[in-house]
Image (cartoon, rainbow, N blue to C red):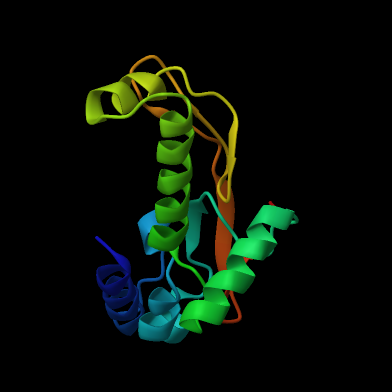
Length: 146
């Protein structure tokens, strides 16, 4: 599910006294998970590919511009959208000017810099990335360091 279902599951679980460790994917990395789940999502762990506190000038610039435009912290779809545009622009800059050419170009794309880190694709067009680990602590997403 997404953040709304995850928040509800955590709240219902806590209400019946069952409090397992909850883990989720990057689609749950939205402030709405915390807003909807409140204390029930404390210690929720997520694999993601972005955190606004990562020490990277590109990330800091993106976060600042996003917050200025939208008065919110960028969520998963914002940073993925940004990097999707970066990848398409890279392909088009290198001569891939239609859908098929862009698809083919992706199989050769290596180490393009985006807000989610280095972007590379394998021969099947699947992205190669190492996720970061996050945890909800005191109502905030923080880097998980264990």
